[in-house]
Image 1: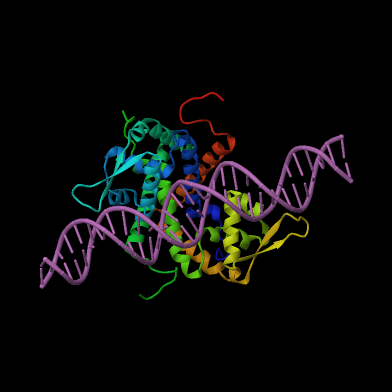
Image 2: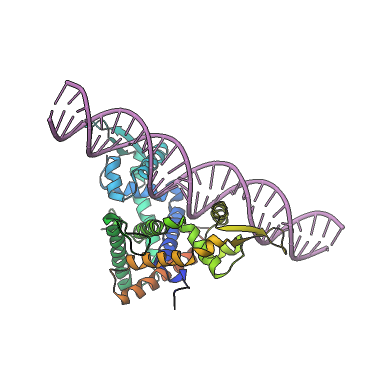
Length: 160
Length: 160
DNA sequence: ATAGATTGAATAGCATGCTATTCAATGAAC
DNA sequence: GTTCATTGAATAGCATGCTATTCAATCTAT
């Protein structure tokens, strides 16, 4: 039986981790000349779409924890990618606003990301690429749903 | 043209990052009762297959940086999952050796990982699951090859 | 044997992710 | 209009990943 063996090279989780690290490394390499890190790029993608977002908005759109976003925004402010201006309608909110530097990075950074995606998927046929993206979305959706529903247990049954 | 827009929800890199974080969170949730973290589980997978491996061996098998492995092994030693015994044939080497505690975790931990993978892929047909794993391997391979070949450049052409 | 290169490992410093906690501002209820 | 809950954000502390550096042990070539 397969109850003893566990081949990491056939494990979706292991492969997803490998892929994500390789994507991040590849993107990091391409955007390093822009003095930009991958997580910062993700935030910029949202701000390029709509400027002056609150931290809570960015958290919702990128699905990371609030504390993670707080730290990323602090680094981005430090690096001159954003300014954080207090909202006039809500004293708790600090809007993340693009600097000129960040606006200038839009073209080269998205080009780098596109190049990385193209390189990664070069070994798949166009049909496969579509199927691959669709399946990744489906798998992520499934896990998000499970997460937001309620952690059942260790793997076996349990009462709660 | 699509030269301005970049939809993260159609970006393989973004989706890979999401998937990897969701996998890690799901696995972490399942193995937390075992007092085990995902990266430690990966190391244990190799040690369960073959005990008493050097740090360099583990680095090669799991494709992480040597410094990353050094830190992970230090935490595993701290947590009583491994002992590090000096090699008798090479004074530089410290072999990572399973403790009884780590040996006892094999069954429940692999069951948890299998459960996480099954949950994640539950929305795909069996045929799709095979294709998905195959494509993830292909994509990772492509990026590994590109990485190990030599970083070309930012995205445009360059002379080197 | 020894000089120099290579190899195994540790360490420093940083980015990104997480959970848990705290604080201040806002909103709701009485 | 105070009290209480909610909400937005910051902070502390940790795991995992990275690069760069350093050190000691080993191996190679002379």
